[in-house]
Amino acid sequence: MQDFTFQNPVKIHFGHDKLAKLGDELKQFGQRVLLTYGGGSIKKIGLYDRVIKAVREAGMELFELPGIEPNPRISSVREGARLCKEHHIDVLLAVGGGSTIDCTKWIAAAACVEHDAWDFFDYEKRPPVERALPIVSVLTLAATGSEMDSGGVISNPDTNDKRGRLSPLLFPKVSFLDPTLTYTVSPYQTACGSADIFSHLMEVYFTTDHSMYLIDTFIEGMMRTVVRYAPIAMREPENYEARANLMWASSWAINGLVGCDKPQAWSCHPMEHELSAVYDITHGHGLAILSPRWLEYCMSNETLPKIAQFGINVFGIEATMPQKEIALRAIDALAHFLFDTLGLQRTLPEVGIVDETHFDSMAFKAVLPYGGNLPGFRPLTKEDVIEIYRMCM
Ligand code: NZQ
Ligand code: ZN
Image (cartoon, rainbow, N blue to C red; front, side):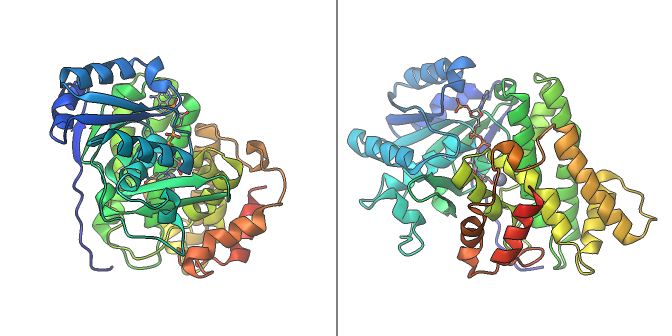
């Protein structure tokens, strides 16, 4: 267990009627607001009109950046930063899923510098984030936790890179979490979002270091919450309790609480970001395909106790069996949840990755930031990552 400092500064408004406070929250940051959103879902669900009304009633001047892509691109960050500079924007209002919020975070930083936005992600340059415009978010999809964390992941199609970076200046100032805004999320995106939440929890839960009992129980509780409510939300999209539980789990899975006592790197996320960088697949689906294979690859005498603990406390596997048997059943239970219960396709060819053409370069990039050896639950070299990709074929 390592020492830690925990601080999460995001103010959350959670529930049905909280959007009524949007105008007041925005106004405290200035007069000129840039509204950012994705491909149009917020118009279909009537949220766009509600947001515009709130901004107008607050007497603010409104500018817009529509069309932020899933797996948001650096070109959208550049365009947003340009608009901020041209119109002297005071505050950014991100309305959407993780892609919109992530993109908006890096717009907030890029608006305050003269250099190109991609420099923030260039390993050779990586200038510090010294200033950022304030961000308010309205979340419409429970998945990434971007509404309550300080990170954002951006794709650069010119170089086939997808890179994330954190900065304490990029926490949203205020986030609105209204579970009813997720009623229209499709069963597929609900499954992918749930797989993403679950993976964020796995990334910090699976450690061979001694972790805090308290934190393990938080994580196991959140995992059980996802297992319980994701299928209900898929079956009954307007089940408030299910949507609310997933939404709050999305935020707490990655807001610093459950990762604070552990030093290790994440494993499935670096591997997945390479898949979505090259093939533009949905992040949560890539994670679902990788996760059970990765866990199987990690099995050793050293890792068995934690995998067995997971099986017993999350999936209710009988504790009296031999530890190896429990661990194998835990991995089966995880695969069953992701592929049978959530209905996600289970192999890379099923999401369009039909050959190994890019495995070598993707694996190289996945371990590059760690000097070639990703220090996770089981340390992974480039060759290990290629092997895990192969297990997914
Ligand atoms: O673009 P629109 O039209 O809004 O449609 C979106 C998009 O097509 C749609 N959608 C969102 N809310 C909806 C809705 N459709 C109907 N009703 C609603 N209420 O869903 C689709 C996916 O949206 P997106 O924002 O791309 O999904 P998600 O929230 O899963 O975000 C994924 C991105 O976040 C990154 C991922 O890598 C990926 O780029 N991540 C960010 C993290 C962070 N900031 O901490 C951590 C994660 O691990 C992840 O890497
Ligand atoms: Zn994720």
